Length: 257
Image (cartoon, rainbow, N blue to C red):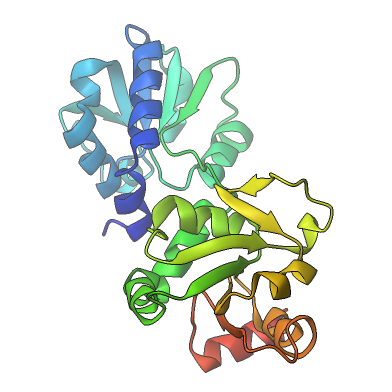
């Protein structure tokens, strides 16, 4: 089954641009594809690898136990056979390329070849965190939150890669965000921005007097307490998490961290 990360990632303009650029670079070279799962089938229907590229074979571990002559019209081989092939480029189609790269270099010992990946993370832990957000139905809770806060001013608290990912894949424009605050902005410049929003130090939030502060970090319990009982104490500013999670999940995360 195709993962939500796969489905959302291939919708992005950058994914399309990067893959088409890479295919243009290797066009005419002898290419072996590594990975013959359902995600490859979907990609092949969109990008026509075997028609656009000079694909000499496709390799996958499943061909060891389920040997076939061809897959999607391409000659099928096992990964162990790659080193005996005449090729210029190894193109990894897996949506999680890191373990595959480790396998290629440390187990198959592929050297002096152009090894490329179809999926590349633009934000650290992109795949893990996007799947995490969909696990807690953030795509459903965000519109409800925007409706609840309609007409209210919002400051986001926490300017890390988790928020970068949220901004990349979800529409935050329905929230009336007037700025982003983080401890790392304590010495910010007058016109400094993060993700297109003006930045503020935590001690500047009171002066902004937003209706809400939404904590935009993955782990947020300690930050909620610090904001409510210290930074924003004796104010009417409401503090909530941007990504709400069940109580049992919060308890488990507190215990594990």
